[in-house]
Amino acid sequence: MRNMILAILALFAFAGCATRYPLLSTPAVSTTEKSFVSGYKAKPVGPVNARYCMGEDSIAGKKSTIGLMDEVIARAQSETKASYISDAQFFAEGQCVILEGTAMKVE
Image (cartoon, rainbow, N blue to C red; front, side):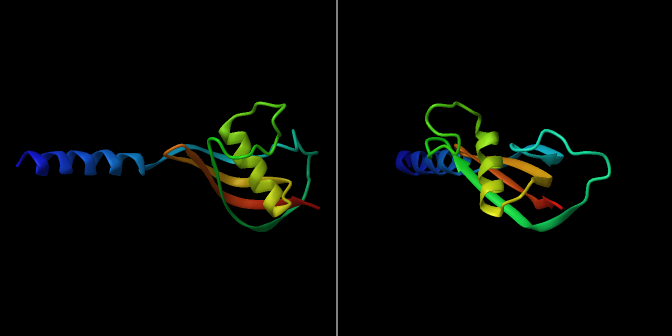
């Protein structure tokens, strides 16, 4: 009986580690562009689903310290060659941050 209770507690502990929960939703994010001129035009490049986990190699390099959300934005932009990510949704899962949205390229 004791072993069964310990097994159930362990199962709940491991299930909690893999939980994905929302952090932030925003219309647009970019690590390369501060703003755009009025009336700019952009076209969708495609969907984005990027992940950055604590301890992975940094896009910014070892000389710079930036946050996990900045890392996942930079990774998404680098992978898609996007100017920015629209309809950005950030999620946390364990020690990882996930970014989903649409890669956009300014024309």
